[in-house]
Length: 323
Image (cartoon, rainbow, N blue to C red; front, side, top):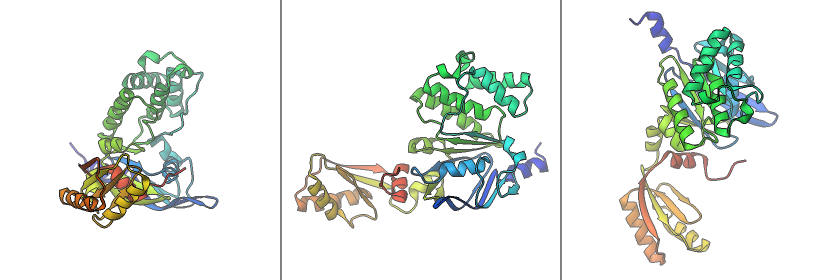
């Protein structure tokens, strides 16, 4: 039977961020960011390199202190994460953080004891996590002998030892082979479906974000520029369809001319090395054929497809490469 305290717990957001800002000298890494995340939610954090994603995550788990603004975790407010709350958070950084000379079991037990687990409970938790993440056959192996994908899965296991209520994963699928990615995705989804937990995941993999996330937050230059469900983002602002005009073999000048001829035909257009992509449907495709025929350009193919999360991301953040 659900009690008033359990209802109140479920209603209390996992994360409330208000006007959070963090500078590194002259660089504004996180800029006046406000965001709320509920329990039972998986939120995917997208953004180009340098958008501020990792800085935000490090502030949420108490590694960095904000310059201004407030973080409220599970209803407790503070300028930064209170020390008493840190045991409720699990953080898996993008860079591997493992003890190379310890076995998988030894370092999971050590991490469990650091979080206050008794040795027997830490051993039981280590066995469970090694099994869940497909590492039980490597329990007695030193971390330095593991493959890159196994090290990544061990890194994730270390963030889960203390059964955190909030799990923060920075690029958890980086370097994983397809089989490992499927396994990690299954583990993450299982955690996200627990109504008492919340999962925040940063990723550059748009397909992964669309598969995993209840909502997607897009950051750029330290600011939150979009927040919605994957379906909501794809439906917002632009036509839902895409018309791809494939022009392989054409010279750059001819592709530039084709793009100029198509400009204004659709509310959004992106030119690539050998194609032009427009927002629109079959009627836009017909317009494309007419304009290119007048120009004397014969495309290899005109392809209709649905708007993707990657399309939205490029529209919001641009095509310029980031360091």
